[in-house]
Length: 178
Image (tube, rainbow, N blue to C red; front, top):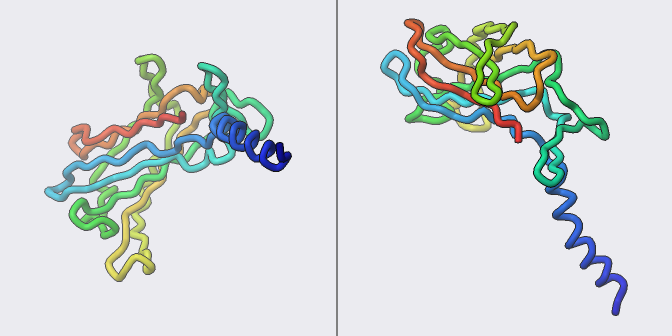
């Protein structure tokens, strides 16, 4: 039997288990469509500053790690990035500036129990961002929400709700880190 073949065989058997054992977090909070001022808006949300944390699955348990250290809580603050585009023309502006026509709320969820976020900044930075590489009309509305998250377990889910100015709930975005 050839040793290179045996090494290749062992590598092909062990590598998938190693790769599956340590995965990056799912930072997407999803994409939703809703109507604002008669226009269809598609909004996506994602958590931005957890890129150094990974999940490790051991049997039926999921652990969070950063390097070789196990992590149990979110960092002190996390950023949620929101992007809005026109439903009919992706990568074009969603009509007039959209974020000044919306309100946001944030809460944590664990085992069906909800509690309000104890500190969030909803800056409403209206910033149409041109992306020349996508064509002459490509742009989007973007905003960040800063969430105070010190002491919050990573197993908790962050729920961001988008509201119309009259308070009507339009969409929910929920984190699912694993």
